[in-house]
Length: 291
Ligand code: SAH
Image 1 (cartoon, rainbow, N blue to C red):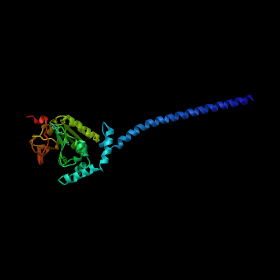
Image 2: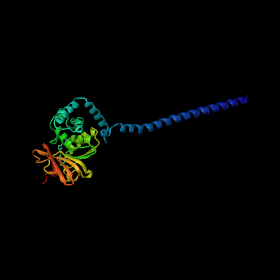
Image 3: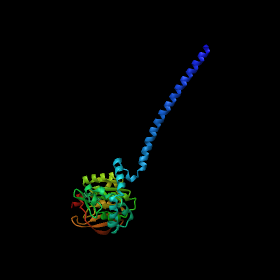
Image 4: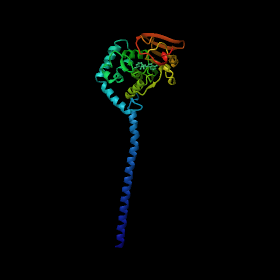
């Protein structure tokens, strides 16, 4: 009898100990699982976020506004604005002498209205310049297209723009080339343009507020340069920041009257020059006005 009791007691102890151990192992496994899941999911999620977003629409500093604007951008591609953009492309651009398909395609896509005050959205695709504040204007769509087409861009270029204004011309360039550096002398406009560009997700446009007469030396040389304010002479720093073989387009002439839209090409023998048409741009201020 005594031995039987001992036997039952030992069996009971074994059962209790193994149940306890089994439970402990199962519990530790389940907590291990959850912590593994946690560390795995975080990098996976962040990987997905960056790989899903195309580089041209990944904002550097504010992912949220750009996602919002990307949404509204795609909504708009089927609304009034996309229709107006298409009409602008067909009537004002292709209907004249803009034949470069890439320029036409890009201008049919970039939401020009997002670069002007909301009160002007209805006019954003009309055939004329619009005010952007500080007495400055966003150029007529045709002039933007004409100047872009004249640079004969292939896609791999680094371009310098002088006169950021609203940022619209910079956006059009950024859709075509690798990198756009743009200089605006009026700080408030530079800030506004930077906001518009980053809200639309552009990460290959760099805005600087300074006197564009001196270009953007640190980033030189450039494959192409576009000046979007009138000058009565070619700023020498810009010529030296242009690569050999590179093109420079500018409104050249009296800053109070019409200028000659001029295309220059830098060759080993100097600058070749072609007259395109006559245009009316706001003057370049700062050093350009000194004697
Ligand atoms: N490209 C612009 C329109 C240009 S309007 C757009 O797409 O909206 C001309 C711009 O040149 C104005 O914003 C004006 O402030 C700027 N500007 C004038 N002088 C300048 C200078 N010295 N350096 C840089 N920008 C200048």
